[in-house]
Image (tube, rainbow, N blue to C red):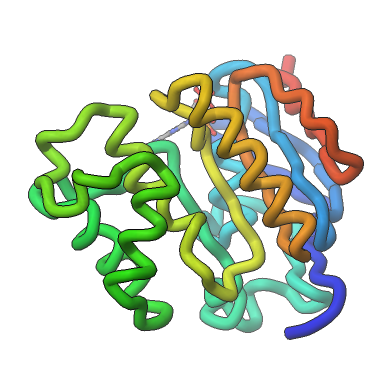
Length: 212
Ligand SMILES: Nc1ncnc2c1ncn2[C@@H]1O[C@H](COP(=O)(O)OP(=O)(O)OP(=O)(O)O)[C@@H](O)[C@H]1O
């Protein structure tokens, strides 16, 4: 798929337990955009990300990828999507190398060198073979984030609180990585509670408000 990629959300409405989280929400994300979804705890950020990622069907409205409803070809859409939930999703009994191989194996084959380079970029050189239960919370998050450093065709990144447990330097590096990905034709939709002020023209914010 070449050219401008586009994720379009229209008339999105979601209720949970009789409470409206959002109503008639609409936005469009194109190649080059980094969108931060913000709002207080419980407002619906994770819910929105899961809907857009095609992981929740509990909504009304439409999500289109490059002009076609996501529902029409979910496997095709998912081949372009890198989704990272708010838990790191790292298997504790496996090493960082094994976790990366497992996470990426479904999409394409990767070499040991590629895995080691990705782990080095997130500061895990020397920890490649250590079981993840022996790593800190921030190091486990870094194992998950290493996926973002692997060359792949997943242009759409949907990241739920990716900065959790990450130190200041790691935060700055991750922000830069998102900008680099967008400049390379990617799209990023993410949530975080920290104040992001990216000096980047494609950076946008979507603030969800609590319903009354
Ligand atoms: N597993 C669940 N079962 C039922 N309702 C849920 C569940 N998880 C969340 N909710 C409801 O959905 C609402 C939105 O939750 P969501 O996780 O999307 O919020 P959020 O904005 O991501 O919050 P946070 O900033 O705390 O991560 C919550 O207010 C809660 O009432």
